[in-house]
Image 1 (cartoon, rainbow, N blue to C red):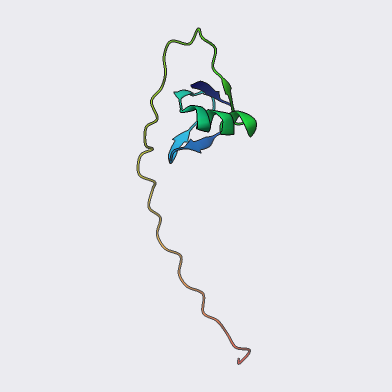
Image 2: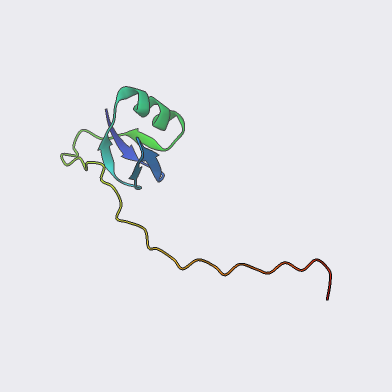
Length: 73
């Protein structure tokens, strides 16, 4: 079933952004429509965007660990 995404969500582990038109199975379609995250796409839309995986996230430096004091100064 063809859906238009209303709120950012994840479909079968792949991110779907607002405004995307995606093809999903009927079970996922019922769930997404029922939760208000998608609506049936209009028939005039000819281009369906396949779900693609996002690029790797930016790796951040780990935060330095905070030294705990037991009340002893």
